[in-house]
Length: 330
Image (cartoon, rainbow, N blue to C red; front, side):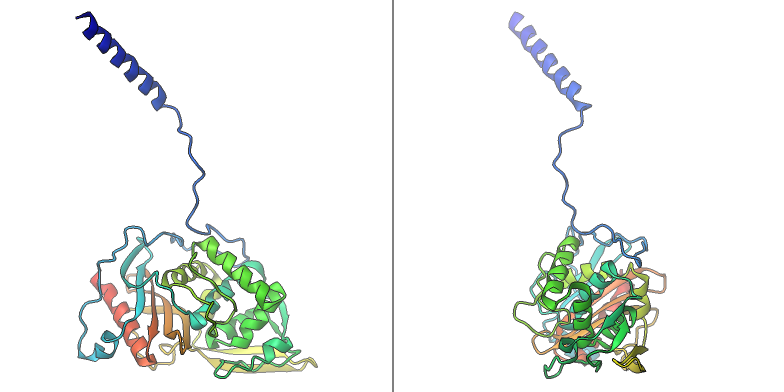
């Protein structure tokens, strides 16, 4: 009996010690955030989305694109990398290969724009260098600026994002960091801050290099940060643009460009009830045809959709249209 009482007293003492410790704050290690939590840029604002949410935690990986109609046959036969993200509740509605290593082509320019917007003012004047005006790579998309031309950074970003000018990318890189190499280091550092840890870029424009790669999820993270910049949204919503600049003698010049987004050109029909705000295209032989879009449905719900490695423009836009239509199912 005495031994039983001793055991009961011991248990009561242990319980009391446990309760006494319950009110104390436990020692915790400092949490490491997934990504960058806010920009100090002149242009930054908050649209109310959790831009760095980890969609890959508890994502709907089992959700797949439903079987297409006969008109979707081209898209259905190809092995795309794609993702559809609903921003309001931080869900991946469907995806394939989000974390696979891919070549980004000109979607690289999204990170170029982000770094420029974060560290510079769009009213700054940029002088076009010899390097920017002499890319010399067959097939490179060029605005045609000459050495010594001067242009405001905002106009240069417009040429970069609307027309996808590779010479604009080099000019921005040199203006921001002094060289393409130093700018690439800044790009990779910003990617890491966003949680885009599988990205490694070596240039500002996306022309193919073996060690220039990313994932679809990382490109999503970059895009989801950029939609918080007023100037970015203004630029990527343009179906065409006029770029004003001066030559080396100070003579005023102007160039006109159409958007590389073929929805804006009217070559592909936007699904009913969908409002495309803007996005970025990209194409190289290794990357295939690529497109990422920020859009809203008729209820004002925001989404990001992306398609990479499509074999043709037709297949790319068919797949993107399929993704946008699919928002009505959720």
